[in-house]
Length: 185
Image (tube, rainbow, N blue to C red; front, top):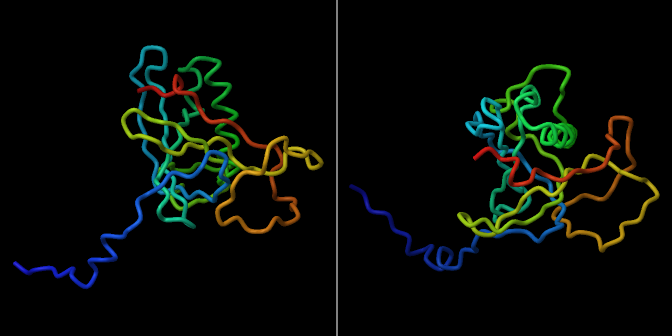
């Protein structure tokens, strides 16, 4: 058995920063690092497939990973109509934000990891995991070109200077994520 000598790294190890949660309203480039999948076993959504993308912030490796929840739109007939309507909007903005081509089939687990897009973060204090980031909205393009925000601009992490939109840009704004009662576990 060999020995490992960390004596030359002791100060670096002892002074290592802790993972962090970004402030609510931060605008960051998020990258999908994996996608968990499952099938609901709850009575009111039994048999409906769901996906839970896990994200990181490539520009800041100390930001804790965070996730979001999306019902499979192909199973909207298995969930509450209100949830299905909200999910359709969330799915639309998620796919626009991460530039997912809906004109052809894709695999959530094989094709989505490493895709990135801009999101506005929220925060939630989870009883099991503590404070963590959530996706408050997906940045899909300008909502109203002449509108001014009513609150201060959110903190931006590593965002490049704005560029003029092209014909490929989407222009339908952002959306809120799912509420806790949308999640089937």
